[in-house]
Amino acid sequence: SYELTQPPSVSVSPGQTVSITCSGDKLGDKFACWYQQKAGQSPVLVIYQDNKRPSGIPERFSGSNSGNTATLTISGTQAMDEADYYCQAWDSGTGAFGTGTKVTVL
Amino acid sequence: EVQVLESGGGLVQPGGSLRLSCAASGFTSSTYAMTWVRQAPGRGLEWVSSISGYGEDTYYADSVKGRFTISRDSSKNTLFLQMNGLRVDDTALYYCARSTGIGVSDPSDCWGQGTLVTVSS
Picture 1 (tube, each protein chain N blue to C red):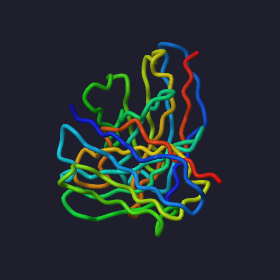
Picture 2: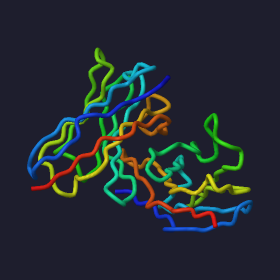
Picture 3: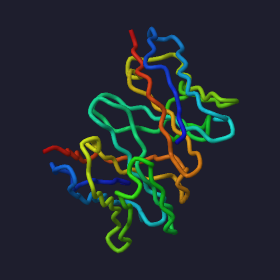
């Protein structure tokens, strides 16, 4: 099975920039997407096809993917961005999720 | 409004069976790829199974292959997950999600609230 690894947690001050990495074998050869999950809520798609934002997602969310690492960046982080974030990619007919990263806005 | 609503969860003994349903509204589910994702209490998201749009290509995580079956009833605009041989580690909140297109690798842009499956004796 395909494995995607994320840091368990990151913290950021309001207004600052935070980046979350997602590592997997040759991940840059696949499309990566990112989901935000706030406490007690269902996941929400925030980035797809490496760097595209769905309608309604703020411009402060951006993504990149190269080599073995995909990155989600939140610029000008707001308190409402505090959540768990998961990357996802498909490999050989399986849809793997990353291990998840808890973003705390201090 | 595009929505999906899961149902069918509950308490079941190890080795038992359950069938989850996902009723779609605001769109024709057979024309989209659909996916089941689960989340054990306090844990991360785990992809379970997907079915392609229009076609009947199905995909399963190794952890459920041979025990779970994904299917759809186009006349009812409903997705199903038949779960047999349930184990304690299948205990989780099961989400239904719609993909943005017909391909199973398309991202999921509409998620339900989930239905809780508890496997315990």
